[in-house]
Length: 365
Image (tube, rainbow, N blue to C red; front, side):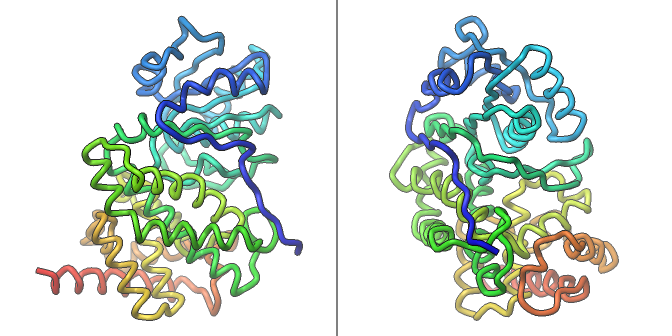
């Protein structure tokens, strides 16, 4: 395999950055479609002069789930009105829907996230779910977004839980990239990790540890501080480049397995990924010092460290085995980890991660 890396075409971040959206779209096409989440369409776009009355682009409200049904609906709109550039304004599923629909139509996509809850904005892949919010597949686009516009003024107004969830997603970046490096497994680009991909992944982890708690406190007070800006960039750009050019492994597969249990559907992607990181550390026999650091970070910012934190306090072994089996499906990236990966080993890792999390909670009282 060759070394491969992927990047968005342009990245813009700052307070009020969303005002750049019309000009960026105009530079990419003549007929634009903005797919906006309901909140974005009702509040964010009008507040920035980007509503239907003052904007030449078509605005369509996202249907709520990145499923084949919604993708078909958006694709039909693109065809019917000859759209040649698509933009997404909203959260992760709005973004993923726009990315897939634009890719299928062969037109560029611009991403303007309203929350910093995942690394989806910069990546050239997206996740398709069923209409009932169960993970179905990962869909890879031919190109990464042509531009990503991150308006810190918008993101700081979102509930802090979104920012913390983004830290959970970003937390996996270094550990998964390092696993792929050690086993020489393919990254999300279909190649080996590049030096820049690995260094970006590590930088993402270091920034989380240094600035994560300060950023959370700033967001709780709707204050855009240097720490907040660093974490927004880590959650969005660094994690996006790091996971894609570094590779995925246990944490995201365990997230996919957890979606099989209905109790977890109320939790965000990054919250489930964070517990996947903890189980992945058990699976890979991480040193105790690393375990302590990662558990301590999760505890400090409020990410799940036990099954009870995911409403799975009473889950029995049989149902947890379903999680392990789904995580170990042949196509899953958990097989990028070193050693033998089996549902039984993953089950034990889940149980051990939960037990350590519970023990730490008890000892801290």
